[in-house]
Image (cartoon, rainbow, N blue to C red; front, side):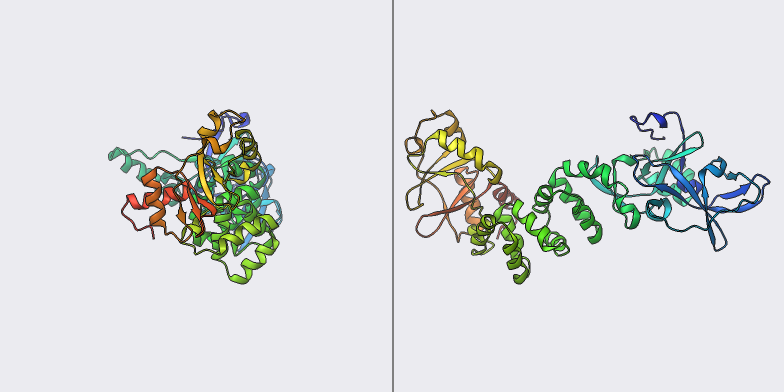
Length: 429
């Protein structure tokens, strides 16, 4: 079944061809002389559904470029070229033009809508009059068998076994190519915004599936904020692999957008000299927060905690805290509790966000705070943190030093991963 883009009126009612059915087909002139066979089709990059500008004609060792306006008739059986023994220029790679067989077939792509990495088994072309447009990529099983020349056999076997194997055609304007060379920029302008709108967790899944060069190519398309959030969601090995290919200035910008605990974790996995260079390039405020966390062992409460949290003292009013949250929320990973500290920064009480909202604006925190406060020392291991959170139904766990001074919080996302591992019977250490 052919795919016709709903929003591209010019492709409605047109004939469908597959590039696999055209490659290798004979080309002849009007007198029937054999001129060679189709070796490739050329598109110009930039459009949502690019027009096929020319074909590459091959005979022996020679490859020539035949403009589409020289072709009188084209189908899956043959091509008829205007003129008697026409002379065409030798094919030479040209900037802005892309050979489909060489640069698209068998390459990995990112399906923006499906949020996945797939491999191109075939290319669907739609014909409007004498014009051919690249309409979509076939990533389904039928496309693979079509390429092998045994599609009819596959369809017969599938029918006898009552198996459904529909064509899986992804419209070209929903595709971000990851192929190297000229094609690497083919869809960059039209899909950059789409990529940045994907959830960072979905982008992380895509990055995990790609090879090194393709991974970096996709990562570099993302804006700094999206890149930071995505980097926080990939595995440690992938984090290091990506960062190792990027210039220090770019990495420093990304680290500034990451939460301090995740930035510290990443820096601990880098060579010490480079980690120090990156800290020097970072904004002083963010760098100080990260440096503080680097003083703790990675698998302890201090190493897991985020040192950005909402705090106040006993005389702070609810209105003041709400205004503080409005100012600090962009830099605060999660706000579930407000922590009350004394003059020495010791943790003496807390209240939930709900408590804050339902209290009068002029109410002081000291009048509504709760205690005792359950906390863990900075040297606590993940097992202790998970057990405390589970026992007292805590969404975040405060971390204190030996003197009871509050240093940070281990947030829900970290706790969830730890508790999930415990539920599965896996060690969290």
